[in-house]
Length: 374
Image (cartoon, rainbow, N blue to C red; front, side, top):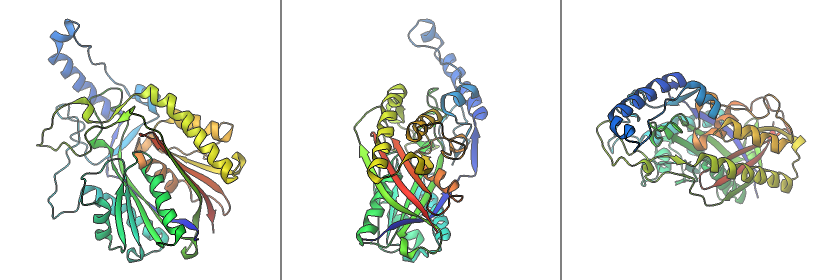
């Protein structure tokens, strides 16, 4: 048995961002347009007028202030309200692979590892731009890694489930090094015309390099324990997959073909599920609340994270103990907890313990207990 460790991490951040203020201007213009087009039905009581959004509403509901996106013009166009993502030819690298390669190279550079040394690439994300060939294999080719690659999807928990799969393979000795990459183009499956969710998501890609601890060339995080759990729920869903719309393409305009969420039910059901999962994982691993230096939680909603932090630690987390990147990145699905880990882990000392935890549609929850090593 070998000790798996995270030796590198990387984050690809798009160049474009949309502030709450910009988003609200576009949404309210769309709402006014929709209300004007449906004035007769509104007057007859057949439908309700679409209410305006506001930066204050978004911040209070989510803690989000801005989000990074691959395309800004289409999202902010009241006549479109979705990203315009150019269809690529079969001879071009796919958009998810392109994002993923950038994050992977950063993780490899951090670890001081050449791509050719990598035995496996796991592309773990909430949506994939195609069914096959696997995005992971495309990333494998672009990087020049060896071995194999495959895609996996456990929605917002894809990264932690991918880490467990890679860590288990390393622990068993079937591979020495693996990249777990999470390219998330959440803007493509978000319904930007729905006031209840139009602010939730952003785009990003993350990657971690996992290898045998004995091969680490510098400071790293030993993966002490992993745990995953699922429980079926239809309260968060997407009935149509992924990149369904382009600038010139048209698809059937059904609301259930994009991201949908029963927010109150999710809040009520997910919080106890996640809190219990983490508590039991810690207890079984012999980790007490006082042992924890850091909680890198899924970045979906600030109120949810604050609640989980209090339950796990038994008190209000101190500054830095439960870092949030939500305000700048919004919800980036599986990538959120990895962004937090990548940006807020350098200050940890040898022997410090932390937990990476993600949760979301499925329902799914995954937790990874790590310990900093010199």
